[in-house]
Length: 266
Image 1 (cartoon, rainbow, N blue to C red):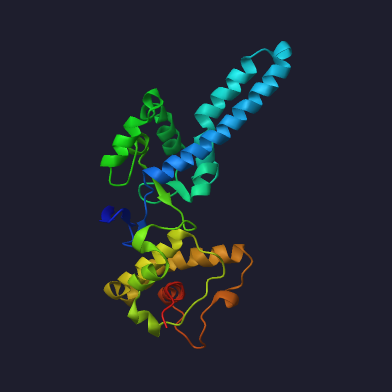
Image 2 (cartoon, rainbow, N blue to C red):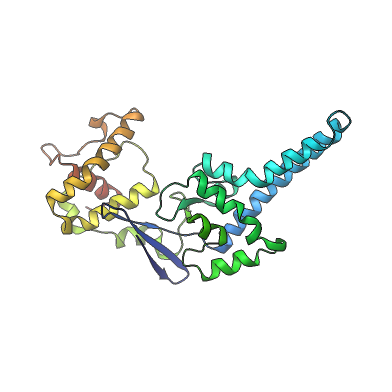
């Protein structure tokens, strides 16, 4: 389930999980995606130039068929391969701080990635990319034709500078939740992803509506997953636990404590 909110020149998509937890995605607009596309084209151009040098040296032995095969693979599988194996990011997208995800915010899968890139030729008809521009102009999530077909979005990552009012202190001030002042802060034992941070903040926002029992039920698998990832990073629970002795050790308190640390409630 998704909703859309537009504020000035920036936009956001609110995504709700089956458990009732909401988090926010920030779709990347046309300018930043053009920059990422330009970087990828430059990288592909360098690769093609290297292929031409190799072919010019080996053409008497192997002919031109090697160049044709490698150029075909580069042209058709460059984007899909990086998106599948590099967390939805080509080198250009990584440099620009954006990545491809499913419309529900989950990681892109091979089928969706291949479909969105298969239709890249339609978006770039006659190399003008007018179809892509028109589709992104009328789409709430700035989707080109391939994104619609593959049910994907291109969104900002946690390391990118989000536009407008969603930057730094202003964003934290919006997220301030006064009831977290009574929850002991929990320092996470590893760097959380953007989606994890958003999910924790939305859980904290909805906590008074859920009630203690339902909140604990929702938090239980999520907290276990976070602790498991911390253990995989070699962090003991004592190093990332509650900061106050005798504190509430429930699963919802654990998630709320991390949310308090993220927001900086004092």
